[in-house]
Image 1 (tube, rainbow, N blue to C red):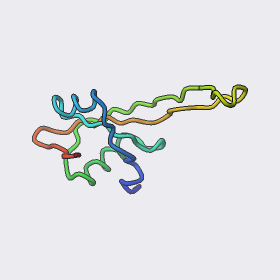
Image 2: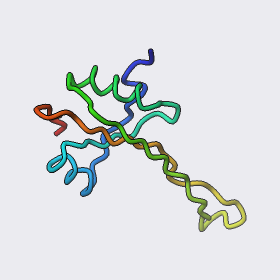
Image 3: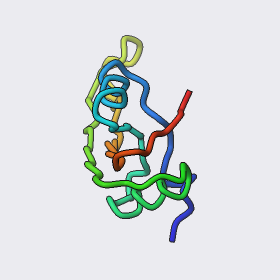
Length: 96
């Protein structure tokens, strides 16, 4: 079993994520690229002492961008793996 601090990288704070957490009890985390649904669910349950009912994982592909200074060398920006965790009724995570 992998430690939960290696699986959960950070909590995603966006308008959509805050609306989901307030209305649907769904929290969004950036996770390790090699983590699967069961590992993410166990990491959230162990870290925050809650019960997870559903985990959705999204892979955001990196975009190819060119730099102003190095026009001939393209680079990549923004690839990550994101997990949306839905908790059972009665459980809540106090992040901030």
